[in-house]
Length: 476
Image 1 (cartoon, one colour):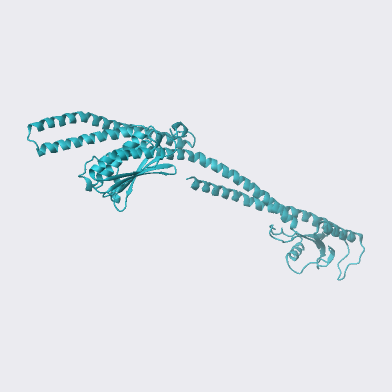
Image 2 (image 1 turned 135 degrees about the horizontal axis):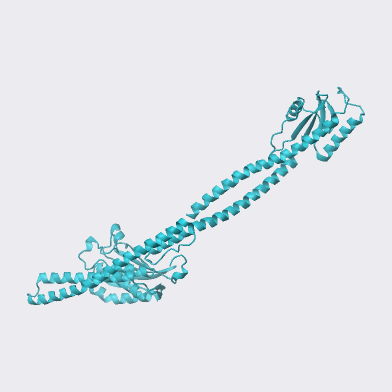
């Protein structure tokens, strides 16, 4: 969720910064150019004031007058060109030069310079030039009229290079860009903190939900941090978990109490049936059937009680040699397998893992018993122990009839038995008990096909030490 929320926030912040930065950059460029234009206007106004006092009239040839004011004007224009590199000139209405610098510079017949000259002849300063951007090499033209006795007698024109203007504009843009980058980094940092603050309760809730789904019903969400809505959600989740745990506890207690209470009447009933059988002819089929069903019911009650205790009990984990434990269970079940004509073999190298030896032994007993029970005579049941990274596995494979894909999805459910195996003794609770015993210790059990036929049951237990509840952080 963070990988989706964080890019969205970054894109939104980048859009906001871009929306602010672009107008600011345009404003900086305009301000820099306006400053240059104002300076050129002041310069042209000063030259126009000097040109007003030049009384010579234009002629078709180069001026030869030694008028001091004209020489002063020419000297000012030359100094201006030498110092600033800006071409400047005063031109009569007929486009001849009163004074210009450099002396080889004259009005062109067309272009921006001629347009500014023509506009100034109308007794108004030329319009502001177009905006010059850092990637353009345009020149900046400003023209002002020289007015004497209310008439425009000449025009002052300046033609400025824009290199310095473009450099200042680019420098301003670099400052804005650096500020935008710094603001973006701060925004990304704030977004990381914000998304972490918002999503931390969600991650805790997800971890706690997974823990409860894995059988750790005592797990709860620490309602601290995050927005108020998520804190209220955490409290509501804890209340729901408490209610679910209470309901499950009541269900377990009911199953355990009912199983325990029914065992005594059933035992008394079976005893009376045996006494009754003594009064009847030996080999009575009805009595034998009643006794068989009574024993089956007693086995179901025992399994129900075992299941209730398995779901309620806590595992006492310790570092255990899984290989030695599996080898012991293989040796214990070998006589039963041989009596049925089934070969039970084990490959159990020393492998350590964290498990409760008692509960793991009980789970392996149920799994091996199930494999031997459904494997026909002459076939083999294999028990293999291996270490795989952070877990150790015990794999039990048989060569029985196996299960279909639909049956694999249901195997391990309470009281479920395949319709093809209803005639085989059992209550349908053995694998459910195994799953409950393994889940209490952080283990798991999975089922799969064994080619060419049969079933593969894989028991997985962790190799790392369990994390104490107080060190697990948000869950307890």
